[in-house]
Length: 225
Image (cartoon, rainbow, N blue to C red; front, side, top):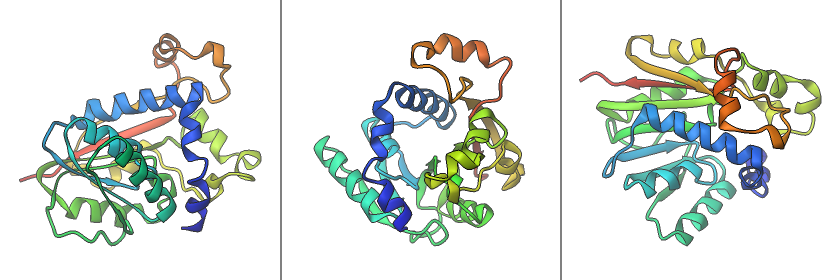
């Protein structure tokens, strides 16, 4: 927990860079194209961090509950949502013990959190438990089998990074948690992590999508009635 509390201070600065802004844009477009959030949905945002996606979902009219283990991250999320006049619940909660009754949410959503989940099947099962029947569950994470995964796994990068505590996954890993109810999946972030700022563009992203593995992957499940 202390690891992520320390990260909270500078976490949002990433999104202010040109590369960070681009990464956020393509990851959001992929996730929402699969998850299809609509106004009025009650959504649990698991590993919400500083509230990036909780806020986006709330701005779309969703009723959002965000959970995270880092109180410092949650404090930033609360302040950001308050500044925007959004009514979002944020709770300090462990993904392995989600303190809500069975079938509490229309949708369950988690972006950029499963990199740090050591028992993913246990975490997935808890998320699935609180999902209503016919509801969608989406998980997005860095793709181990990509140039981005290679970077995050490299020792020089990990030395001074929170990612030295990470456990990266592949698309096959994600689907294996509930292969029966996987209904869709996708990838994005085909541009390399060492790209020059001047070269960042959606055109290059589309061009590389035919030859590169996406650095970020999402899988979608639908809970059977």
